[in-house]
Length: 300
Image (cartoon, rainbow, N blue to C red):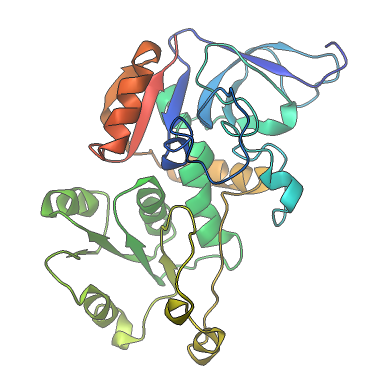
């Protein structure tokens, strides 16, 4: 293996795995994308390099690193081959103490974050960064709507506020709404008590003109009846761009980490942290949707 570009993660009470909803269906055999079995689950992780291969040029022993979700997505738009390089699906993930990875599949960790915070960046954070900056960068003074209190939406809220945008957030519980306000949300709407929350949100935008961006978290795209599908003409008449996002590239992740360092942004991590031997309990906790923000497992 001396000819391979590789790195190894070691656990010394500073290595963590972050669970995301993408990880949830894998143990149940419900993951809709290509998956190998058996597979080491989980895509989000942070650790320390303990050894490098002879051809590695980007990292050295002792470097703090975080994983890239799609290991083959280096820059630009994602292509089909890169979609088949997802950690925890086709490629063994990070729910382990040691792992060997290609150097193209990691980035240097954010210097202002703790190991547990760095372990949350690979999927949800990069997805929201891609949504806000991957095509048409968000500008100060613009208005963004984020839906729910999952990892993608919370990261989008934090990134948008750091950019000087106005953020309108929706949630199903007033208690979660209070947390969103503490994170900087300018307006919070409970969509369970306000069935016309979309109209309410639009009225909160300048002159009721609508949003420069809407982060709509749908999970996995499933089939819908033809009559329920949005028409292409609707996007034209409303002068909007509809774009699907599948995490993001290594280049985008580097940009995101620079922004996190420059603005001292800290991910929201659920107060409950699990040990590696409690992985099953961590999955059950996530399936029950008991967490707020990111859920982490301490690998040691």
